[in-house]
Structure formats: C-alpha cells, structure tokens
Image (cartoon, rainbow over all chains, first blue to last red; front, side):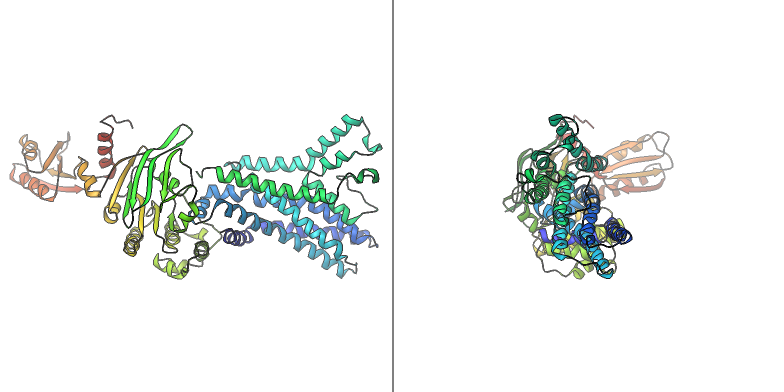
Length: 278
Length: 311
C-alpha cells in the first residue's frame, strides 16, 4: 500500500547521507542569512528583509536538494533491483509513485522546517520580533516549492534507465528554470517593445509567462509576503499598479507551483505504469 | 483447478523474442519446476506472471484473474522471489520483513520468519552488510510472508550454500504440505527432481516438454556415463561391452586407456564392470557421473527442433 511504501521510503531516506548533508547545508545557509542581517545591523525592516533573503536562499537550494534527493527514486531502484522486490509485494505502481512522492517530500520539508525554526530561534535570541503571520505562510510556500520539485524529480527519474542521461536531464531542467526561461522571456519583451524594456511598463503576459516558471512563482509569492521596501530581487519584477489587476497574484503563483508538482507526478505515474520492468 | 495459466503467450523486446507461443498450466497444490538454460525465457515468464512486463500476445491468468489488470490482487496472495531483485541496503532484515508483512496485511512475526530461514542472528543488521547467501535467505523469508497460496520463485537456491539448499528444500516441502502451489525455476536437475511433481523444459522461449522429471529424463537419450580405466584396451573389449544388456554406447579415446560407457541403470553398470573384469584387460579404476542437465536438455531440444540444432 502507498502508506507502507511511504514509511519504508521515509525511513530509508533519513539514513541517506545526501539527505542529511542537504539538511545541514540548508540550515547553514539560512543561519548565514541571519548572520548577514545581524552584521548589517538590525532595523525595524529586519524581519521582512530576512524573509526576503531566506526566499532567495531557498529558491536556489530547495530545487537542487529536491532534485538531487529524488532523481534516483525510481532510477536507482530499477538498477539495484529493489523495484523488483517492491513490485513482488502487493504494491501497485500508483502506490509506489504516491508513497515515494510523500516520503521524499517529507525528506525535503524537514530541512526547510529545520532551517526556518533555526532562523526564528536566532531572531528571538537576537531580540528581533518574529511576525509568524508572515513566516508560517512562507514555510508553507517553501514546502510547496519542495514538493513541486520532488514531483518534477520523480518524473525525470522514470524517464530513462541511464544514470548519466538522467543527471543531464536534471541539470538541464534546473538551468532551464533558473536561467533559460528568463532569458527567453526577456528576448520576447525586446522583440515586442524594442530595447530598454524596463524603461516602460512590463506587460501582463510577461508576468503570466514568467510565473509559470515554478522558481519565479515562488520568488514572486515570497515578495508578496515580505513586501520589501529597500531591496529588489534581480530575478523577479514587480507588476506596476495598472498591470497588477491582470496578474492574479497570489493565485497565479500557487497554481503554477501546484500544477508543476501535480502534472509532473501524473506524467511520472503514466510513464512508470506503462514501462516494462526490465 | 489451474492456479497459473499461460495461453498462447508471446513476449517480444524490440526484435528479440523472449517467449514464443507459451501455453502452460500449474495446478493447485503442485510443485512445478521450470528448467532451462540461461536466456531460455524463464525469467520473462515470471515477469509476465507478475505484471513486470506486459505480454505482446496471449493472456496470463493467476487464480483465474488477469495478470495485467488484477496484478495487485494476485500479488497479495503470492509469495515472490524475483530474479535480480535488490534489497534496501540501509534497512535491516527485520525491517524488510515488517514492510512485507504490513504491505500484505499479514500477521506474521518477523522473528519466526527469520528463524525459519536461519537469519535470526542477523535480524538487526542492515541488508547492505549481508552476504549473497544471506540476502537470498531474507528474500525467501519475504516470499513466505502471509502464508501465500502461490509461491513464485525464480532461481531460489542460487547463492545458497549446501546447508541453505537443504533448508530451502525443507521449507518448500512444508509450504506444499500446507497446501501452497509452488512455481519455481532452477538450473539444478537434482533440486527439481527432489522437489517438483512436474517440470517443464523451456528453450529459446518455447516450452519443449512437460512431465515428471523421470519422464523428462526418459525422453532424453543421454544416459548416465561411466568411465572405466583399464591397463590396456584389447580390440575385443569395446564390442564385448557394447553387447552387455543395458549398455547403450561405448566410446574409446585415442591415446587413452579409458572407455566411456553409457548405461541405462545401476544394474547394467555392474554388468559392464563384470565384462571388463572377465576380459583380458585389468580393471584399474572406474567413475560414474550423473547426466549433466545441459546434455539432457540438448537432446530434448535437438529432437524437438527436428535435429536442426542452431546454437
């Protein structure tokens, strides 16, 4: 059953060195952000600025952690033969995909929760006020980012029996989300409006297409939460007031993250259930 | 009632045909052995049964249910030892069994199962530190979870030491006496002979013959071979041996004082040795060998394909 697979998988993941290493890394990066803010000097803006910094750190690290801990979920079980063990028991392929998704999402959410908790504890210790009404939604949003990339990693894991090709696909996807998407979008704006597009108002479609990218969606939603006044994110533009009406935030960002996770999961399941186990 | 039924099943991988027009039935309560050289299609047959792969043609049913669409139901009632299975290196033997027990909604105690396969002392060690034989024992224990109605075991005794082999045969007899149906593959004739009510020989993806192991051996023309060493070979000795009742073939080797004599049974071996002693040659030594399985297969394979052997 899916819950048995999930438990087994979760227990297995917690004993994996890469999961432990990823957790330590994320906590360290988050505390680094806190340290940076403390060195810079605490102001009334600190809680939101710190949230903005954490969002930036997570937008880089969480997709990588999720992809690295997930791309082998099916691939490695196929090559080690444990998939034959798993499917020799009365698990359906849907049980396996569902269980793995939940367990690996859990394994990614744990370091996220740990990092936020560590930062909040540090903030309390440093006497910085902790606005939970902002930090709890941020936690949920970050978990959603992790889950979306676990879904993507799981789908990639079912694509090929070759480790090299799978790793290439993971790296390629990360760069596509991180860089290529944004570059192409910027070109599209240049083509439509000529050079120096940032002088003028960015059109609504720039935000719609841009935030269809799960990383940009996450950053956009984080901006909505932190409302930074004295910092801007190089990777995310804020829609001007006249365009904002056509950009249904935060539903656009949430839908983007949910769809990436859900559709990837569905594609991974379809692929897994129609492939011979050889 | 047939527990496992293959009806005109073919499986192709690209241009390679792994199984061709396979029809076979394993009856309730019997121990059915699958014999055949590597690459004959045994594992593909099990893979089809377990829905690891879909058939290109034909149908597979287990417990009267379709193997592709009702695989979860089938595997709930089946104990499986697949070929090339892997264990989770980071989980212990006991954890593997707990997982299998929960997945099957069974009530077994992991300790009992580990005891049955002789792994009690290694229960809490991670499977990554197990030897191949221990992994195989653990896999057998997993297959026994939930007292399944059907056991599907692909090369179950591979990697087991002689003690492990004896333990395995004892377990299979216990399972059969409990009423389980057993479908296993092996390349060890002795094992199939000792355990199976019926056996089928698979070669190049086709089921060549089925029957009891003794029937299969009777259909093979290869007889057990006895090698006789003498001080010299008189011209008359091969002929004299060939005339002995029950001796089917006598061959001599050049520059050797050994004769290979094929006899149908123990009595005829004794008569052949008597003939040597009565001849003008001195008997130095003799040695008997069982029929190598591949030789017996070869005979049946060649006859089935009308002598047109294409290796």
